[in-house]
Length: 290
Image 1 (cartoon, rainbow, N blue to C red):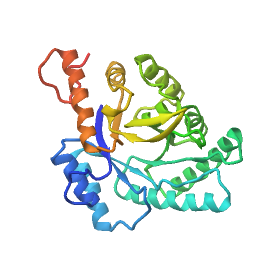
Image 2: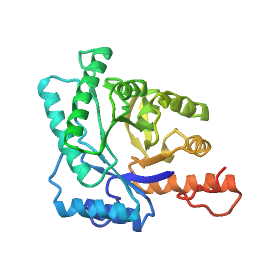
Image 3: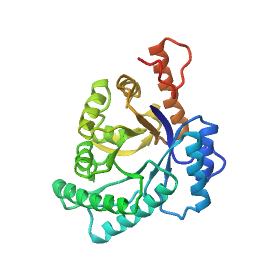
């Protein structure tokens, strides 16, 4: 199955609430996923809003993900870790209330710890958080995001390692970040094949994938770009997804948000038409794709 959506309330949506955003995503864009953003800080979501989002998503088959506040550090000092626990737990409670599949979190910084100690700290602290979520019967899973700067913990290898050690933690595969950290490493089909080989030990049944163009230099991301302005191609990724019949959710994190989410949808449908020989295709229907 292929799901497509954008990270946040669509820019073209006149209403600026998450309720408005999910309705617009479904009715105006014909997309079937959304990543709701708590990135600038937490707010108290009214029960009525949470119930509406959960019910609307279920009724219209929209998959919800949530992104926790950006600044978290599960490898920091005690104060930073406790602050991160609080933000993650509150985000997880709200994510669970709206029926979100995953809660995307940033893992943390190396600081003065070094790579090995940072990995051990993040394994230890995510294990504790996963235990707390289970105790509170929160069904939303933690998704650890791959990161695009060298000073930040979060290479694809590190994220796979944490997910291997900690039960119920899954990766959020940010392709723009991986591409930047690898100094432009995702260009050809074999590059994407190699990436998914690294994910194989996790035996994932679903892949949450962030897509954006990105400006980078010397293995460090500067900022996101529209997909067409970046140098990471979509076609090899889409071919891999269709060849392997992967269950994926593709989230546009481009500055153009829904414009590029729809662009992803059109590229998927173009690839389907090429395979089926038909003049029309619908990204939600892969029944005729061989």
